[in-house]
Image (cartoon, rainbow, N blue to C red; front, top):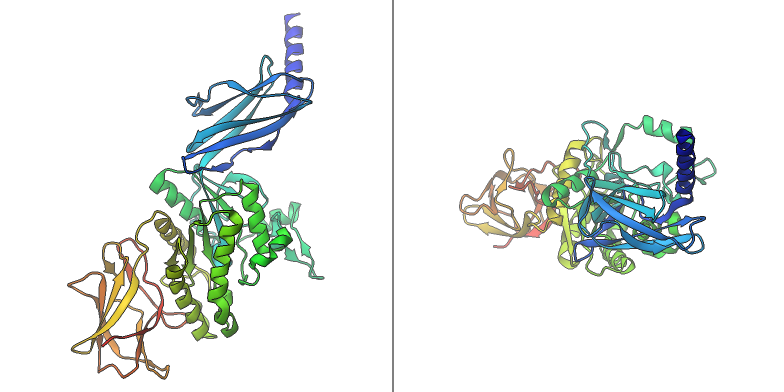
Length: 477
């Protein structure tokens, strides 16, 4: 008889539990953006039939123990089958387990692995999308989650981007009739199983940020390979998921509407003469539009100066984009650039997996508010046919793994001159470089660093922040 009664109670409990559901708000593995106070409000809603007027209670646990101030307490009343609740000022950290129950009944549900920390948007083209070989990948971290491209929160792991299966149509492949088609089911599983490339920099950035700060990170992958500034045009935002900008904006709003910052790696598609001519204005407008649409006028925006490409077309335009990117950080507030010119490649244009890890760490260095790395300030001709190049923002000292490479002299006519025979860090100032010339500098000649599309450049500082491509730069006399 007792066994029968126990079975009846269990069945009744199961039935009631099934009627008590979470239908909105927070989900498993979600990262909530913390506010200026270092906390976030957790909102959740749901339904329950047959429990009208009853009280919903909630508690928050970390490591199986209730968080101080978040023990069981009433948070909502069930009215006409619906309920909604809010836990205010949940502190930075986690993972948290949110438990909810109907008071006086066995009905209970739980939401697992919630984090409170910082959200970062990953946007741009293929080097942000990720095309590194899927070998020796950055390992997942329990405090780094991703709002994946299917709009589900999960613990982040490589590859972060999954374009063919994304929720937004703009990322889908096109069929023979040029119509977007989403990969699903077995086709998507086959695509995932046979991927050889896809590593990016986002996970390494996030893991490094956790290492530096202990603050959980949520990533929002939004990049798409081969895309231009025109395809990221904010004017297309009303197209929603049919435009890159609209898809990014939709995803940000889906996770609460606020983020800590944006990481951007794009520019390779702007390197035609026509694209380079309008890039600077488009780039400024793009950053301003993001800040306006996100409602965050001071939103940090960190980007990568485009690196190498084993190709001999549009060399001047390629270098023009790099120079405009270098100059942009002095014009756009709350903006900073890191450098990829010294990175190894996994094919003709894509940064390799191991150096993507370094690049992610460089972006984390910027996001930590540290000196951004060597920035050329001036080039001065000294007696004895020597040029002294002074850098600002150096972490520690300038250095190179071998003899310093990357500097060149360009005649006023545009012709490159084999003039520099020796380069070294100034022994009296480790933030300056000395260039030794084989004969006097011609009138009107200019200095460059990283000229061409596939130069060998290796100047960096003690924090592995590389010197950017620059030039042409005037040499003062």
